[in-house]
Amino acid sequence: MSVSSRTNGFLFADLRDYTRYVESHGDRAAAALLESYRSLVRAAVAEHGGAEIKTEGDSFYVVFPSASSAVQCGLAILASASESTAADGGPIPVGIGVHAGETVETAEGYVGSAVNVAARVCGEARAGELLVTDTVRALTRTFLSVGFVDRRSRRLKGIAEPIVLYRVESLQEGVAVGARRTGGRFPRTGIGRTVRVGALLLGLLVGGAAAGYLLLAVQPPDGGTSPGGAASLSPSPSEPALDAFPNAAEADLIARIPAEIRDECRRNEQAPSTGALASVHCELALTAEADTVWYESFGSLQQLSNTLTDLILAQGVPRGDCAPDVFRAQGNWQVGSTHSGRLVCYQAGGSSWIWWSYDAARTLARAVRGGDTPEDWQGLYEWWTQVRLFLR
Image (cartoon, rainbow, N blue to C red; front, side):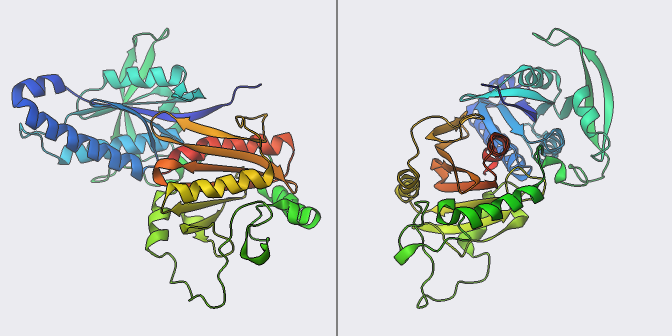
């Protein structure tokens, strides 16, 4: 089996001289500082589409879909920290390091040299400083409105070769982020969506009801479950008209969807799952490795679980782990301490499907790609490994 890897941006952030601060100002002041620091970091991470992989004490480890979004987040953290005041009257002292590269994903998070380098770069950053590697500079210098100040080559602990570091400074007065936000868009590979849309439509015509969860085309019998197994709540003529989009539940759900696809989301009025408080579908870019993704929020984990159980029974999906070369399985997934839930993958009606839950957030997502070749499934799976990280 081939090992799947992806280039991401990795950000590490630490408070500087925190131990000395505790000794100088006492436990209460230190606890207040730590709370303020964590709050401003998490706000910036959420704003720039990052996923918090691990937090220990005053140290943050965050992954982003691109180097530019990691840099933008780092600048936003420093801007907020400079405007906040610690007990000694100065700004919150934060040092940040960013690197980008390929890693291998495990159940505990990402493993690879890129993560190690990012952590070491953070260790070199002074209070109020964002340091990046030459790799990050090369990836972002023509994209972001920032300047790079050479901090010269350094030998970092545990890293064989010297690393050239740069201090990042925003070129926009009063603004701590780059000029545009599309730098976080997920990498695209493989065939274009136009071809796959044709395959999806062909699957509808040829496969008929076997297409299962092509929800926009299926009419479930007698108000029960659809042919793929998910329960339907198609409105009856006696039900009142839905309010304007988005309503409160939909707005809350959309605010948690990855920023790169949020603007493409609309209300799913065809076949929301039983018990869903909000259900939206998002049509993806032509070059995406998935055609459509649905997100649904539930009032209870049991209602969400029932939807997945119905799907598994209807499709007869065996226990196992979905993988680049395993397209039919159902089990669990987890990334560090950030997200975890259930995972189901299968192919039906000439299309590839992947369903996954965020159990702590009581949220269910599913995505389809037209086509059932190994390349179609691998493309969808690799798309999922990125998108799943960035639910807020």
